[in-house]
Length: 346
Ligand SMILES: NC(=O)C1=CN([C@@H]2O[C@H](COP(=O)(O)OP(=O)(O)OC[C@H]3O[C@@H](n4cnc5c(N)ncnc54)[C@H](OP(=O)(O)O)[C@@H]3O)[C@@H](O)[C@H]2O)C=CC1
Ligand SMILES: CC(=O)N[C@@H](CCC(=O)OP(=O)(O)O)C(=O)O
Image (tube, rainbow, N blue to C red; front, side, top):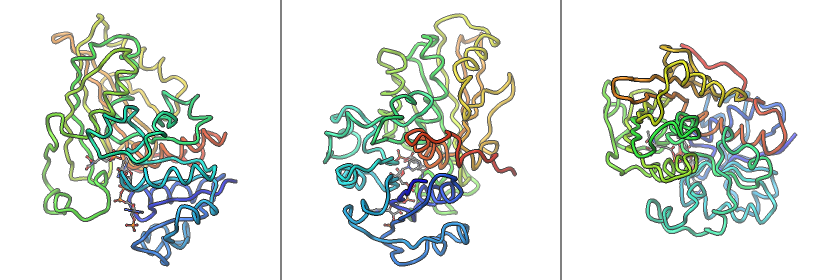
């Protein structure tokens, strides 16, 4: 049994960590933090957690925190994480950071898209926490940079083709649609019910979204050469889920059967990736509440393009579930521990 701490337990990814970890056979939530709800039970903040996660929210210094758990999930905004993580590492703790602070390997790229970095010395050490690509380095890591939600759906969607040099990495277009929990729990006009309900809209169009460099970094590593992407995020009037529809020009003539076999072979040992049959398409409500990524792939011979569709739950495989998967790997637990429930439907 390992004692784990959730820093930022009152946010959406913090709540999802508590939901998953309170049923985990090998983990005990020994500390949970929130400044706003200090002194109040987490089950009062999230009534769904009554009788499951009755821990009291605390507001502690990094030194006080370090004495209370062996592994920490930092589910806090960018900038906050980079100031906190070094102190936890100095106390020999393992850290899984859900923010973007340690995802970008090149500090100048991070600083261009985010803000000045206060602990760039950890960028080299941090392991990008996408288990399907980096499992062996995750095993021995002490700092995991848990991937962003849109990047998870797009990178998993394209990895088999890029690895096999099957597409031109300069022709990639991804239209991704996300539920509003992706924007976090803080009040903002753009995610109010009336702004989102019964409508659908793109945002941060034209290389304006900060996930662009993270996606390009990982696609380039897979391709072995620079890859660029036209990425357009959209906001859906649903609470959870991401569906990415990705297009790219094929380099080699591949028919439908060959491309599905390529994906099946690439992901044959991956429990959390489900490659669907031809003409069976992913849906956000088929992965809801689960750590699955559903992928389907279709060749369009008329345009010589491939269309990849990839669905995840943004707070599970796109954040907290993937973080628990990383913890399982780092701690030598079964990788599916605490994550083996079927998606909820309807
Ligand atoms: N939502 C999603 O789908 C995804 C989110 N992420 C990333 O995960 C992280 C958390 O996201 P999410 O849960 O959505 O965010 P929320 O806004 O819902 O929650 C943020 C949490 O951080 C705490 N917090 C905020 N500022 C500080 C601070 N200065 N010091 C200490 N604690 C602080 C808040 O609690 P309090 O104010 O009470 O202290 C709250 O518990 C972010 O970095 C986000 O980008 C990554 C992938 C997907
Ligand atoms: C719908 C929505 O607003 N989604 C968020 C993505 C959240 C995410 O993945 O978080 P990171 O900030 O940790 O990269 C956005 O577009 O900013």
